[in-house]
Amino acid sequence: MTDQPRSLLAALPLSAERRVQLQACWELTKPEITFQVTLSALAGYLLGCPEGLNGWHLLGTLTGTGLTAAGVGALNHYLERDYDAAMRRTARRPLPSGRVSPTTARYLGMLLVFAGVGLLCPVANALTAALAIATVLLYLYVYTPLKRRTKYNTLIGTIPGALPALGGWTAATNNLDVGGWTLFAILAVWQMPHFLSLAWMYRKDYERAHYRMLPVVEPDGRSTAWQTLGFTALLLPLGVTPYLVGVAGPVYLVGSILLGLYFLRPAVAFFRTRHVQDARRVLIASVVYIPALTGLIVLDWLLR
Image 1: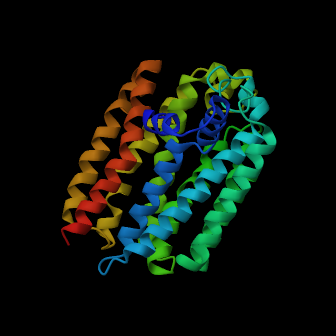
Image 2 (image 1 turned 90 degrees about the vertical axis):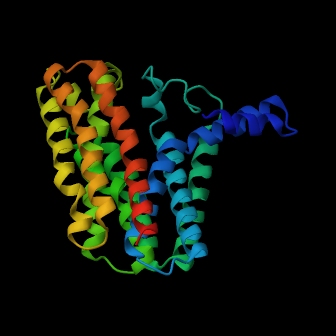
């Protein structure tokens, strides 16, 4: 949890117990992931909106997307609470630590999802709301259980992970044109090195919780290293496709190439060494990638 929400909670006239519960509820929403998801929706919206931006429409779209993502995060905590308890990295999360009850997490998640989808349908459009519903169902009831059944779970999980970016495009255009699919492809491919590097760093933890992550199933790391490098390299040509299809300009083109090279460097190092330190560098680069890409799209949009 960031320092800012902590300080805000400390300023409220609440009991210590209530502050702990509110802090736990905030953590349930996976704020870092929710932020990334909302940024991807912003990127999609701006790519689909070449001129005449409606600020309230954009705000409603991002709010609905963020609420839905936060609800999915809380429900994911609820579904995986027993597995989180078995992992050192996640044992201090709100449910395994007992700071909040499973019932609270479930109802909070449902409330946020209903609020997010309920906002997207009238404010954005029905297509965007449908994509949000698909994201919820695919993430919670396809990707989440597959994490304990097949090593291909990460690849399958790229679909719900990339749908919010496509939802940003559909909110602006109300269609599924090629421009939206280019961003969907970028977000889908980006997730592979992001999650593979994380899985390599915590492979022992995942093994304790009986997750079928690729580094657990193939512990020598050869396939993990190859896929991390391959998908990161694929981002270089994919990153320029918004320019090639005419939804982004030259500022975006140059920036996306430089950003792709920045991401590729730690992936090459990890491919060579398979060291945890290099996996961490890949993870850090992946966390930088989406905000930086969104920043390029914003700058390119402002300069049109």
